[in-house]
Figure 1 (cartoon, rainbow, N blue to C red):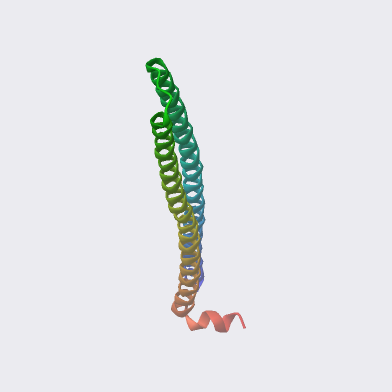
Figure 2 (figure 1 turned 60 degrees about the horizontal axis):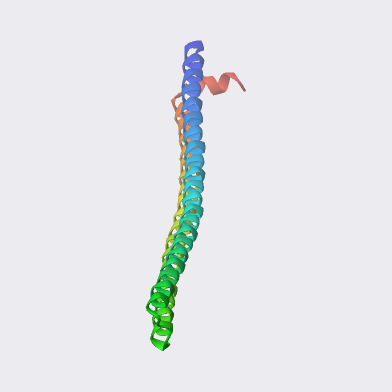
Amino acid sequence: MGLNVFLAGLSLLGTKKSYDAQRAEAKRRAEIGVFEARQHVNDLFLTKAQAIDESNRRIRDMQIAESQNIAFFSALGREDRSVGALLKENRRIASEDLEGIERSAELQTAKLATAAAVAYKYGQGASAGLKAEATANLITGITDIAQNLDPKFFKGTA
C-alpha cells in the first residue's frame, strides 16, 4: 500500500508539473500578444510621422518650385494671367498630392490599429484556451490517478 501512495504522489507531482508548464505557456502567449500589439502601435505612430515628413517635404518642394517659376517669369518680364494660372495649377497638384499622402497614411494607420487589436485579442484568446486546457488536463490527471488507486487505500483512510 505504501508503494501505491508513493506512485500516486509521483503521478500527482507529474500532473501538477504539466499544469504549471501549460500555465506558464499561457502567460507567455498573452505576453507575446501584448508585445505584438505594442509593435503595431509603434508602427502606427511611425507611419503618421513619416506621412507628416513626406507632406512637409512636398510643401517645401512646391514652395521652391513656385519661387523658381516666379523668378523665371519675372526674368522674362512676364506677369500676366498665364503665370498666375500656372502657379494656381501647381498649387492644386500639390494639394492633391498632400491629400493622397494623408489618405494613404490614414489607411495604413487603420490597418495597423486593426492588426494591434487582433494581435492583442489573439494573445489573450490563446492564453485563455491554454489555461482552460491546463485545468482540464489537471482534473483529468487527478481523476485518472484516483481511479487507478487501490480501493483499499480509500477504506484505510476512513
